Length: 209
Image (cartoon, rainbow, N blue to C red; front, side, top):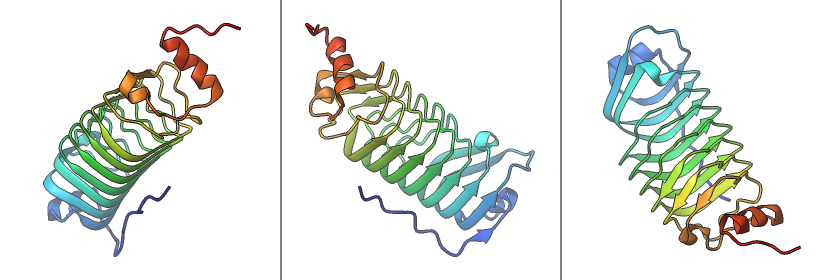
């Protein structure tokens, strides 16, 4: 598995207020939640930035691309990244509950120990994506194009895969109880023996002991 890491350099510590006021969203380290006002970041690309302990509930992200950046202990729940580009980004211990990536392009992305429940990847293009010890339950993949998609100890309970080719994608270390695959998505996946019994049952096939 080869995922290109974010290229983050020349980091300048900035407050969130200064970061948004300057309207230059690059080469910055932004930490903490000591802010009361609402902020807007729109129509731009966030590049070579590190965000730590930021609650984006009071930050509007509109028409944003993100490249070469790291988010650690951040809350990005219910954010919309539809039809946007994310490249070489790490999300570590983040909450992205209910966020949307419809028709988006994601490349070289790592989700490490994240709450990813109810994500929507419909019609997204995923390349070199690593879900590691994260909760992706109740998420939605429909007609999702992917290359080098990795799941490591990830919860996929009640997640749906529809018209999404998953040949050689390894689910053996992840929890797929309640995961829904259509026949196209099911073809060629890698699972363990225990998981195979669940999937056979899902198809209505009974195993005679």
